[in-house]
Image (cartoon, rainbow, N blue to C red):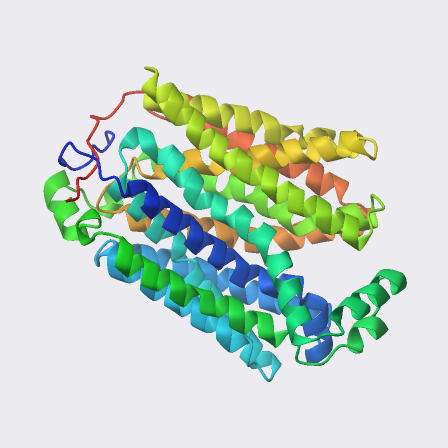
Amino acid sequence: MTPTPDPIRPSSPSPWRWWVCLLLMLATVINYMDRMALNQMARRIKVYFEMDNTEYSLLESAFSIAFAIGAVTTGYIVDKVSVRWVYPVMVLGWSAAGVLTGFASGFWMLLSCRFALGLFEAGNWPCGMRTTRAVLSREERSLGNSLFQSGTALGAVIAPLLILALLRSADPGEPMRNAMMSVTGGTFAAVSDAPTDTWKYPFRVIGSLGVVWIVLWFLTVPRAMLRPAEESVASAGIVKFRDVLRDTRFWILFAMAISINITWHGYRTWLPLYLQEQRGFNEREMSQFTTFYYIIADIGSWTVGGVTLILCRRGMLVHRSRTLAYGVCVALTSTTLAVPFLPDGWPLQVGVLLIAFGAMGLFPTYFALTQELSAAHQGKVSGSLGMSAHLALAMIYPVEGFINDATKSYEIVLGGIGVAPLVAFGLMLWFWPSDEPAEAAPPAVT
C-alpha cells in the first residue's frame, strides 16, 4: 500500500489553523485535569468510600477498559460524521462524567462515572488527529500534534494546583490540615479530619470547564475548515479499512503505540512512589519535582514539533526529519537504563528530566505518522491504535506491580520501560517506506 496523499485543497492556508491547534491543546488540558482529579484526591476518596487498594484499582481498570472501547468506537464514528459535531459531544460526555463524579454517593456510582469518563475521554485523540489532518499541511502536522499532545503535560501541571485551590475554597481549614499531613506523613488520622465531601467540589468545577471549550469551538472554528468525512473520501480515492490493516506501516505504528505509552504511563504511574519510597523525597518535594517533570515533558513535545517543521522548511524531506526527531527522543528514553545507578541529587533529577523530554517528544512524530495511512480512515486508525495501547497497558500494569513487590524496588521497571520505544524505532527504520507522498496544500478558509 503506497503512502496516501492528502485530498487536493486550495493553496492558501487558513490563518485560523494554529488557533484550532491551541483549542485542541485546551481540550487535552481539560481532559487530563478531569482524569487526574481522582489520583490527586485518592486518599480522601478512599477514606470517604472506605475502599482498600483492590477496590481502588478497580476504578483504574474500569477507566482503562472504557478508554479502549471509546477509542475504537469514536474512531469509527468520526470517519462517518463531521468532527465538528463529534468532538464537542465527546467533550460534553467526559465533562458530564466529571461533574457527576462530584455527586457520587456510593462506590458503584463512582465506578460508573469513572467508566463513562474513560469512554468519552478516549474520543479526544481520534477527533484531534482527524482535526490536525484536516487543517494542517503535512510538514506542519508534527508541530500541530505537539501543541495538541502537550495538553496532557499541561493538564498534569495545572490539576494539582487548581485542585489545591478548590479544596481550600471549599474548606477554609485546608491549610492547617496540610500542615498536619506534613507532620504526620499524611496518615489516615490526619486526612480523616477533613470534611467528608470536600473532594467532590473540584470534580464539579473541573468538569464544568468543558462547556466553556464547547462554546469556543463553535464560535471560533470556521465550518469550512472541518469538512465532513464524505468529502475527503470522494477526493482521495479511498481504500477499505481492511487494506489499511494489511499495510506494514499500520503494524509498525501498533508497536509504536504500545511502546511509547509503556514509557510515558509507566513513569506517570510509578515515579511518585519511586521518589518517595526509594529515593527519600517527602510529599512536597515529590510534588514539586513531578510538576517540573511535566513542564520539561511539554517542552520536549513543543521542541520536537518545532524542530521538525524547521528542518522541513530548510529542505529536509518530511519523513527524514521525523525519523531524526524520533531517534533523538528514543535515545533520551533509553537512558532509563542508567536510572538505578544514578546517585541522589542533581544526577538523578537531570536523568529523569531527560527521560521526560524524550518520552513526550515521541508522541508528535507518532501522531504525524498515523496521519500518513488514510484520509478516510484516520479515526479508525487512531482509535484502533489507542485501543491496542490501553489494552496492553491494562495487562502490563499488574506485571510491573508484581515485579515491584517481588523485588522491593521500582528500579527494574523504571530502568527497563524506556527501552521499549527502541524496538519500534528499529522497525520504523527497517520497514517504513522511504518514498514521500505528494504534498498537498492546507485548506483555505474565507
